[in-house]
Length: 372
Ligand SMILES: NC(=O)C1=CN([C@@H]2O[C@H](COP(=O)(O)OP(=O)(O)OC[C@H]3O[C@@H](n4cnc5c(N)ncnc54)[C@H](O)[C@@H]3O)[C@@H](O)[C@H]2O)C=CC1
Ligand SMILES: CC(=O)C(=O)O
Ligand SMILES: [Mg+2]
Image 1 (cartoon, helix red, strand yellow):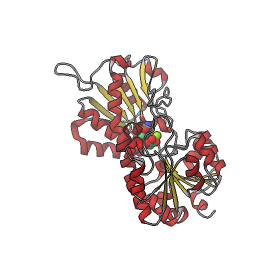
Image 2 (cartoon, rainbow, N blue to C red):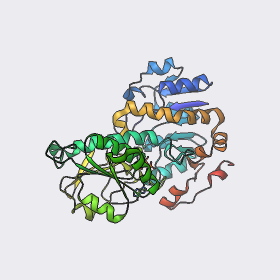
Image 3 (cartoon, rainbow, N blue to C red):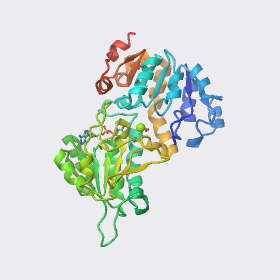
Image 4 (cartoon, rainbow, N blue to C red):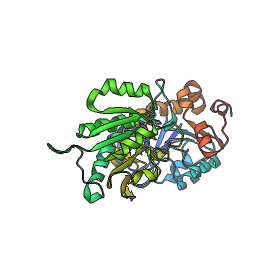
């Protein structure tokens, strides 16, 4: 198979879909790998690194999209990229279609087959291709939140860990999955007073067993959330209902009850955000204010630490990418129901129920898509 990896073009996105190591693994299995010139530079990989791994370098994205059987990326294809996708071409990347009707329409029109990293599953109920970026975004959230809390950045001027004689910042993390757990670990490590909310008791029990007293946890109800948010210096939004738009858990009206200069970090923004006032921002202009509350809502947070993120994502996608290349998408998905769960679009039809529900579109069963 010919595998193509273009340069990411989303603003301030420095990750790349394939590392030189991933390219080498594909070449060793007899595949042809084409990388867009300079695609790896943002993550610290030169064209020479890819050539040493056996890949070929092409000058433009047009050439990559025109020749590759499978496109491996990081972020959802942008409008100009969607125009280059072809019928029968396989796209393997993050998509986040539920909050994105325009992208969905373009992918359906392209006739491509699209497997979304964020809906591939594993046999422990996890999301193995979302997890590495959730780890990164979770660990980044208190870091960017702490910066936003600084007075000059619009925040309350509160130090995460406080100092002897002065209380630390109160951090509330809504959602105790991968993002939330990593966020809580780092925030607690910075000395903050941290509480995680989740609506899964099993998850809360796990957090309690593993993390003991380093942070508190509470069952997520509207009442508990409102009370904690009112008193918080920083709220980190980390919920997920897989494939679906994020539930709105903090309303605009609640902002007026919060402390002026408190910070909301909405990591769940790539699924539409879990605060009513969230709108996606970029690394170039990440922070905005609503009713005196600072919002950080960057939809591709891991791009800020592109090298760490590219390596972490590459480790997770590699076995799936190799299976897709070795067997073709149909056989690979037939053999692995977890990979089939990643199928979101095939030949003009949606194949993921939660996306169909969010966008009011018909869905073809993924199992039937395998036959088409
Ligand atoms: N902005 C960015 O750059 C990035 C965003 N993300 C996003 O972060 C979000 C979280 O991802 P993960 O932690 O990997 O998901 P996860 O599935 O590991 O955890 C989500 C948690 O939310 C909980 N939850 C669901 N509804 C809830 C509610 N109403 N109240 C409290 N808890 C609730 C679930 O029980 C689960 O424990 C996703 O939307 C993901 O796409 C992930 C990585 C990067
Ligand atoms: C998860 C995701 O969308 C990202 O890492 O950008
Ligand atoms: Mg994202």
